[in-house]
Amino acid sequence: MTNLVRALKVRDVVLFNIVAIVGIRWISLAAATGPSSISLWLLALVLFFIPQAVAVIHLSRKYPVEGGVYEWAKIEFGNFHGFVAGWCYWANNLVYYPSLLISVSAIAAFILPGSSWLASDKVFIAIMSLGLLWIAIGFNVVGVKIGKWVQNVGAVGTFLPILFIAALAAVIFFLGKSETHFTPADIIPDKLDYGTLSFWSSMCFALAGLELAAVMSGEIVDSEKTIPKATYLSGIGIVLVYLVGTISLLVGLSSKNVNLVTGLVQSIQALGMKVGVRGLTSVSALLITLAGIGGAGAWLAGSARILFVTGIDSYLPKSFAKIHPKWKTPHVAIIFQGVIASVFLLMSFIGASAEQAYLVLVDATIIVYFIPYIYIFLASARDLYRESRKDAKGKHLLKAFASAVGGITTVTAIVLALFPPQAGGNPSLFFIKTLGGSAAFVLAGMLIFWFSSRRQARIGTAQ
View 1 (cartoon, rainbow, N blue to C red):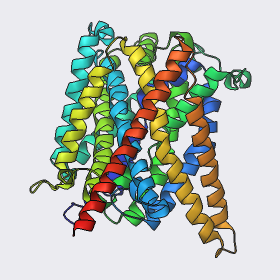
View 2 (tube, rainbow, N blue to C red):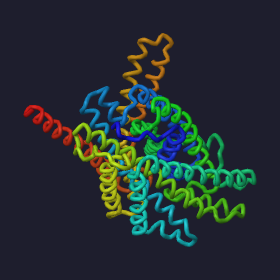
View 3 (cartoon, one colour):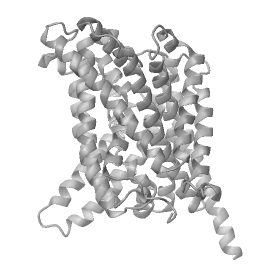
View 4 (spheres, helix red, strand yellow):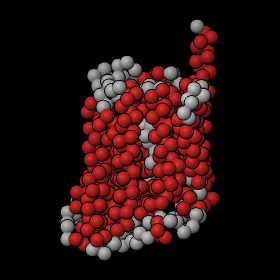
């Protein structure tokens, strides 16, 4: 790992976090629920996002090593738990890429005037998704010095459409032409049924990802100081984008008219027509597409490092631990990640519409991805509790409590993700597909660890 290049500074990590965590599609999902999603965003902020920041800042300072969550769980709970945490973190991205790229590809259909009909064309979505995936892979293979600009440009592509829609929404709101009312009664959910709770778990997922940069600690300049500072700064930006974006979208469209995938572009189009501003739709679609490439690149870069460090530890093939002689990147791990993600992306279109595939993939991703978060919160709470014995002011104990709250929220989100969204369908089939698919990923990881451990034991005995 000493051959890795430390090229990421505070600005790069801030933009990396923003493009990795902020998903334009989550704003559409929130707006489709109505103004009550505003209070749900705030609840997710208090019960998940802030505890997440506390845990990541503490662990990245205590264990500033390449591999992040894999190493944190391994150090605190042992090799088996480290591998399970790392495996789930890697495996969830096999489903996350399709869910991200499907939505981005649908928005890309709005770049050219008159081509919006392609947003529902499965062939176009599949080809576009694969193209965007491999663009992100290519930039990541050639090194973080170049690859980081994909994330940096992507972050700009995230912010600008939100600025566009916020400016348009402000004009429409003050003209009294808002499509949505924002009274206290509207902002508070009128009922807490399974659909609302399941959606809230998705909002927690939308706020997850602060730990991703820490997976690349070996490529961050002075990571012990850089990651905490970047976490504070990016956290503020992420919360503002989600809240401002959701409110602005609802000013332009009523919740019942929000498309789950292309809602933000639709709202910019509707608001632009109301105030006589044209051309923003195509520009915004292009920017959001760039943001999607940046987001895919960020998660590709982070999750490939899990393959890299597990290859070093010999739980996965040693080839994953290879570093490119020129670009100083784990190129084998990155390319392998791309190949497997491509297979899963194409599989997501079998027997389902693009939107149905998107919804199922989102829920499956939540369960697998949140398993490593249990380890993050437990590791943080455990170490902070140890530190609290030496802390007379109780500062560490308060942080340990915050980590525990995050852990409870994570377990709750996993349970809620098993319930079907309000979009309908067969609840029993949804439950079986979501739980069965998630369990299969975890069991596969356990079997790989078991066989690898036995192989290492035999080699050690022979020596």
